[in-house]
Length: 232
Image (cartoon, rainbow, N blue to C red; front, side):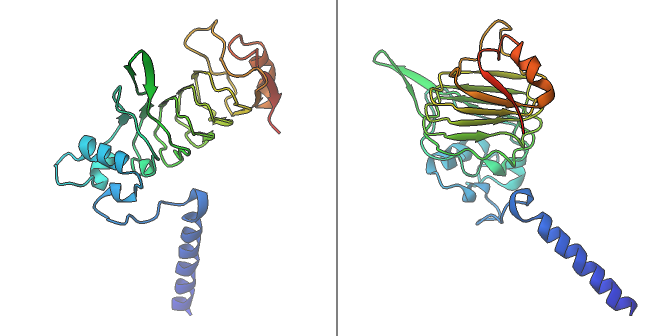
């Protein structure tokens, strides 16, 4: 009887663990190549970038340990990236993501980011994100990046929805012409680089904030030009 009870207990524990590892709260699926986090990527440009930057022992792979050591992914000016950033979730200790890459040629600025999705929910240590001219990005959900303190987002022409975490302290942005909705869980209105500088998003953009913070947002110079409403 005691053995049966123990077997049942173990089964319940395993079942609960399985549930915790399912869906959005779960762990990542196994790597196709357990010795190379780049095997989870679908963009050869991003893969080659990671091999060049993060393959510390030059064995042609980025191991799980090497990926865990990465604190910053930053694209040099003129480097950029075409295609997705799938696989970035394999860098769990990433603190800075800098997609602010551009170059000047023949009297024109050129930008080279074209990813349509950016899934950062597994990058729990992120503190700073910079996005410049990510032309196909429609939704940016940073609600699970609870350590994120600073966000810069410029000239994302397809961006429609922006979701911000509760601990965000600074946001700089503008020239996102079709941005319609911002959901911001921060009770204290995030500030910009200049306290007198307005957030240059469309004035018809609706910003949903905690109900107790509506007045604070409405009376903060940085946010006051936007349509501030309470979160349901």
